[in-house]
Image 1 (cartoon, rainbow, N blue to C red):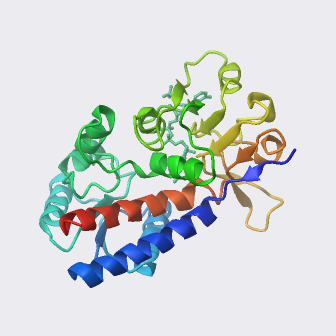
Image 2 (image 1 turned 90 degrees about the vertical axis):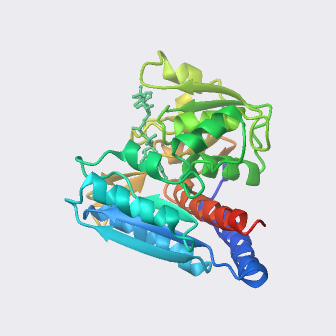
Image 3 (image 1 turned 60 degrees about the vertical axis):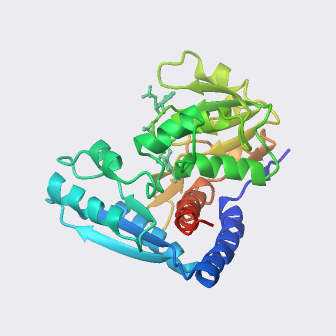
Length: 296
Ligand SMILES: NC(=O)c1ccc[n+]([C@@H]2O[C@H](COP(=O)([O-])OP(=O)(O)OC[C@H]3O[C@@H](n4cnc5c(N)ncnc54)[C@H](OP(=O)(O)O)[C@@H]3O)[C@@H](O)[C@H]2O)c1
C-alpha cells in the first residue's frame, strides 16, 4: 500500500487564493490593506530566510508587509519599544517577532508585550489562555493550526478519532493538543500527548489513528511505530548532512517518509508539508485581524 500524500504546498496554495480574495474584499469594501510587521533581531541566516519567505508570501497576496531589522545587541527595552510602537500603529494588524532571539533577550516578555489583537503568532498568554478556556476569539498558533487545516482539508477530520501527538512544546505539541480537544470544528478528538519521559513511545504511537510528530529528532519515527492505515503528519524539519547530494545536505522530517508511507493511509512530507502551511496560517491570522479591525 502506498499512502495518500497530504501536500502542504498544495493546500497552502488553495488557502492563499482564498485569502487573496478576502484581501481584495477588505480593500474594496473598507479601504483597508492588512498589514504585517516582522521584527528580526540579529543576523541568524535561518531567521532571515524565514522572515523573507513570510514577507514575500504576504506581498504576493496584497498584504502590506513591513520588516524591521534590529542589531544583535539591541536591548530588551529597545525591542519592547519597537513592539509598543507597532501595537499603536493603525496600519499594522499583525506583529511577528522572529524567534529565537539573541540570548540576552527574553522571548516571553516580548510575546507578553505584543497586543493580543495583533499577536498573529498566537503565542501570547491571552491568546493561549483563550484557546485553553474556550472563551472569546483567539489567534491559533500557526503550526498547530496548520496541522488541523491539513487534516480537515485532506479528508481526515480529527473529530472522534484517537490522535497521538508526539511532543509537548509550547510552540507545537501542547497548543495542538488543546486545539484537537476543543468542542469546535477541527477538534473533538481523543488526544494522547507523548514526550521524552513517555515509556515505550512506539507502543503508544501504534495506538494512533492520527499520529502527529513534533519531537525534533530527524527521521526517528519508523514504520514499526505506525499502525497500518494511520494518518501521519510530520511537523519536524531538519537539515542533515548528505555527502551524496550536490548541496552536501538534505532536508527531512521527524518521520522516515519512505518507509512509513508504505504503512500509513496518508502522510505529509517534509519538506512540502507543515512548513508552507505554517506561513499560510500566519497570513490567515493577519487577514482575520484586519477584518476584525474593520468590523467585518
Ligand atoms: N514546519 C514548521 O513550520 C515548524 C514549526 C515549528 C517547529 N517545527 C519543527 O518541529 C519539530 C518540533 O519542534 P518544537 O519546537 O516543538 O521542538 P522542541 O521544543 O524541541 O520540543 C520537542 C518535544 O519533543 C519531545 N521529545 C524530544 N525527544 C523525544 C524522544 N526521543 N521521545 C519522545 N519525545 C521526545 C520533547 O519532550 P520533553 O518536553 O520531555 O523535552 C518535547 O516535548 C522540530 O523539528 C522543529 O524544527 C517545524
